[in-house]
Length: 210
Image (tube, rainbow, N blue to C red; front, side):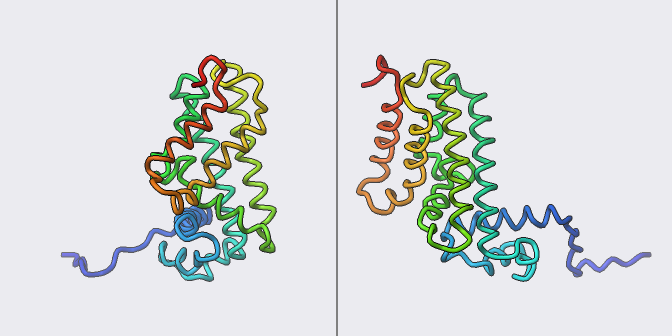
C-alpha cells in the first residue's frame, strides 16, 4: 500500500511571470489604497502574498514603479467599469449617479473605491519618479469621464452646453477628494450624498435642474 503523509504541507503551484505580477499588483493596490504611498510598505505587499521583498523589486524595480503600475491598472479597471455600467443603465447620467454614489466608496473595484489612491497621488507631485505617472493616470481617468459626458449629451441626459473636459475634471475632483471629506467634514454619511447630488445637478439639462 502506498503511504501518503497527510502532515506534509501542500505543494505550491508555481505561478507564471504574468500571474506573479498580477498577484503583486492585487496586494499593492490593497496596501496603497489603505495606507497611501508613503506609509505603504513593500514589505507589507510581499507579506500579503508570501514572498520576499526582492521578488517585488525583481518584478517592478522600485516602489515608485510599483505604485505607478497600480495607478495605471486601477485606471484601466475604472474604464472597464464605466463601460460595463453603461450597458446596465439607461443613460450616461444614470451611470454617473452610480459612480458618484457614496455606497461605491465601500467596494474594492468601483470608481469610488480608489479615491484614496488618486487623492494620495495628487499630493505626491513633488516626489521624483511619481509626478508623470500620477498625471498620466489622472488624465486617463478624466478622458474616460469626458467620453461619458459626451455620451450623455448625445442621449440628452447631460446638458448640451457643458464642456466635457471641464465636467470630467469636476467629477474626478469629487471622487478623489472623498477620503479627505470623510475624514474632516461633519456628518459625512449624510453630506456626501448631497455633494454627489450637487455635482449631478450641475450637469443636468435645464428642465431637470431643481
